[in-house]
Amino acid sequence: MLAKSGYEQPSLRALSNLLRDRGNWPEGFHWDFHSCPSCALGLTHAKWRNGEQPQLDNGWDGYIGPILGITKEQAYTLFMCRPQVQATFADAYITIQPEHIADVIDKFLATEDAVAEALV
Image (tube, rainbow, N blue to C red; front, top):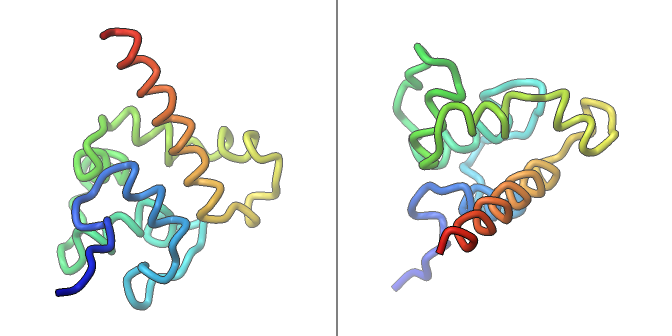
């Protein structure tokens, strides 16, 4: 029996882990932060919706949000607010790597976990 990769179901946590695990990226996927099909959004599509035509009527954030179980607004904040990502890392636009985006996702998840715990 093959060992499970932990990436069978799409989620923000799975995406964060996948961004750090290039060996499990879909064949042919390459990282380019400049382009939605080649950044975290495109990786999500390639990993969990490969073979489907992306339905982009509502933008990439509106397409990816439901796949990852988050709202369009959360997807926009995480993936489309590039100036925020740049400011977070104080790097040139081109140097942003998958691990940087994974760090942003992890911070978001930590905040969400803290809010959920406070409500218990």
